[in-house]
Length: 66
Image (tube, rainbow, N blue to C red; front, side):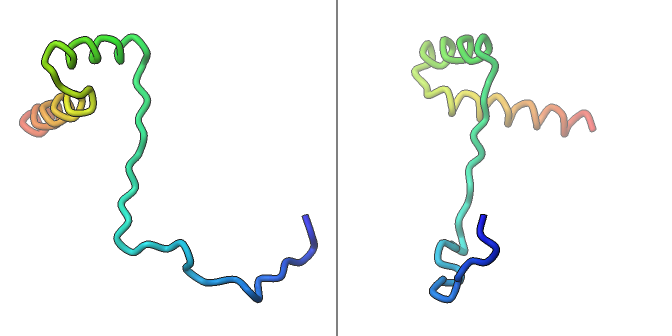
């Protein structure tokens, strides 16, 4: 690394996007992903939609028990 860097031509906020929403990638266990993929195919759904529905139901159950 250099001792000093020249930022005189830099632009503040060049890549800033006010309303940007970042989506977090979530990695499933390989066996779990296979099982969910099979279920999604049988239902004619995308695995993402299936996982979202499952998680929403799980959150509802947890909320009811709390």
